Length: 295
Image (cartoon, rainbow, N blue to C red; front, side, top):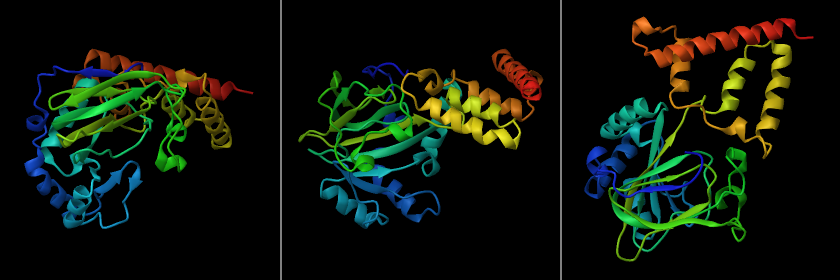
């Protein structure tokens, strides 16, 4: 977690069963996106070339993309596909973070993206087929979104000549690959197999240490809030301040939201969650005291 890639070869899961999704049902999912309103649309990518604005919003256009070697990408599957919503909801309770997932359907002998990294932890759950993955070291520890390296953001493929190979492996159905935030990677299908996988990532407005500090800064007077937020953003962007970019302990954000909603142990919170509530109350009390006495 936030440290090094990991390939779980023996998960004991059939992810196509867990998420109720396989290649034979893909057209049903694409059709559901086509008919949905305000829930996002699928689009196509090939080596970082994005067809988000070209005939992507109709089922026939997506199939055409796929046949021409493009990867179909469907965002926020949990909003469209009930089995995925149910599974991600259960897993979120276990690990303590809200989860989102995008679907990637890649035809044979191609790649959706060139070298890039992501500003969040990602977990690839393989439903069908396989891909060969190459994962390099990270050029910037625990990057934020403005540090992301990708052809889409930079306009060119990032130079990876000075990075170190960390892991290269073929990932197949039933396996789970974790790539920590910032590690540069790419993946390609082989000529013998297409690929279908979900990329799962933690989400939420309060997931990092800097987010927690911003929560407390919001208690300050409006006269100083702007200065505090500006300095927090500046400090969090500095390479050596990794502690500000670290994710909060699992469950912390969930517990904090429940505290803010006024829920207590007598209303279903466990002892650990109640402890987080107490910590939140004490931190807010100390912060208010500091603000009232600050010069």
